[in-house]
Length: 187
Image (cartoon, rainbow, N blue to C red; front, side):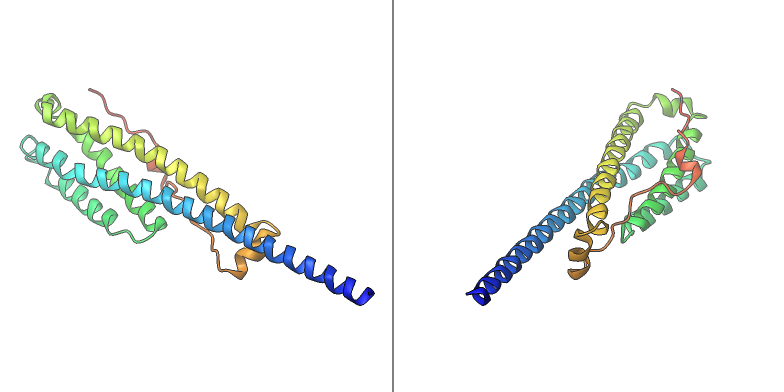
């Protein structure tokens, strides 16, 4: 009888352990999916930003005939940002693009006719709105990545995470000090 009782206790412990592993695994999958969804939200806003930039540049070209280098810098930065393959590359490329856009907007200050153009003003407002959405999406992504990373690195869920190859997610961080500065634009 005692042998059967010990076997039954071991079986109950094994079942509880398997249920615990299943629960932690499902939780990790849910967190990973939330991180992926948050990245998708950033990606949507970045695409919107990338789509607005050519229109903004084309509108400005008619007024800013001597600013070829500025246009080329934006175009090149946009191409690099669109070709980013992971979060770290995207963060770096988007930082370069943000710097190029800031320089462009500062240059616009020298062209009062352009600043008065309704098309340009509408595109600039769209870009500003998109930048705000990117900021909120980036904050949400980083929050989700933090929750996920904590779960994959804290005991005892880190054991299950290691067993099933759940890996750390990168944060979408500002890369340079210049990006941390607020661009100065006046109308």
